[in-house]
Image (cartoon, rainbow, N blue to C red):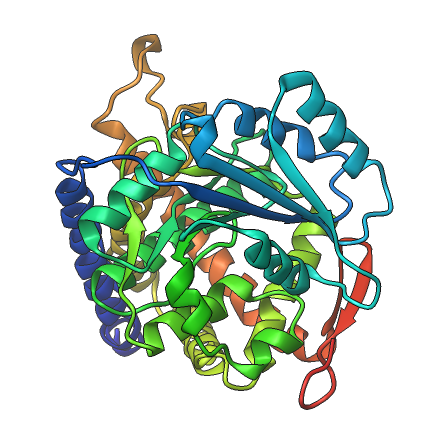
Length: 406
């Protein structure tokens, strides 16, 4: 019983309280934004996209660009090719011609490479004060630009981050990736609502060009292949610029799920950011997360091996179930609609679904996954020290040197 109380008091209780606070903040912010309307004339905006080797994924993005509900004369689409080795450029040109889509296509000059260089070039070519950044492997909702502008106008923020969801496909890996992405976005939105910052996703954000031109980015921004979104977010916050998360309905960017190999490489790339100096305390944040999950799992195993069946049941019920319940409350609004509508989260009784049963189904899923997710985090942390090389867009990078070079 001692281990049971220790487990609940020192790991579960503080975590559950933080989940409760974050859930309430997100719900209040979402309700507040639903009353916002855009006033005045629509401004000219620039949509900037860096790409490399997106032959198999670029088509959905192009189709969503053609479907954007924004005046054509006020929309500037700039795409920069980072030395693609496939037919991505040809696809873009053919699609633009077929759909009469006005896309300004540029190539990175020799001697420059990487997403950062492509983004800088795109920013230099932009002629508006509103810069929208997105990736080449996403789908944009038709009203995305207007929704983001609406959020920017009403919040007064210099940077607006977009919600991102993983498109639901069948498979355990996709379910795991969808839930993890939803949790990351939910925590990111909650921290912004509290006046702090944590993460954002390069798949969709809006920045004021004038503010961005005056911003001093950390040295790590220029040395790392990724992290452009997170480091920019923290640099904007450190400079005193206001940040907002767009919670308006119909503004969520959709991201295609990863395959097993791509998922692994992506996690290594994400994890490599913790080794970047001056990157907004990512190492400390990652270490705290790892300690929490390691202690969480260690205490759970100690209870299973050293306590009776009643203590184990009580620990799971009070600990993991209530953890799952509040994780579900936090993440529910951010889960992909396709996943919510799947049989996993539906009450099949009498062949109909019940909205009341959905939160409990999500809570049950999180409760069952909690020990496995803690194991995943506990093992992933040390492995980053051994596997610090990763492949991205046909290139291999390494963060083994100090300071890291890529």
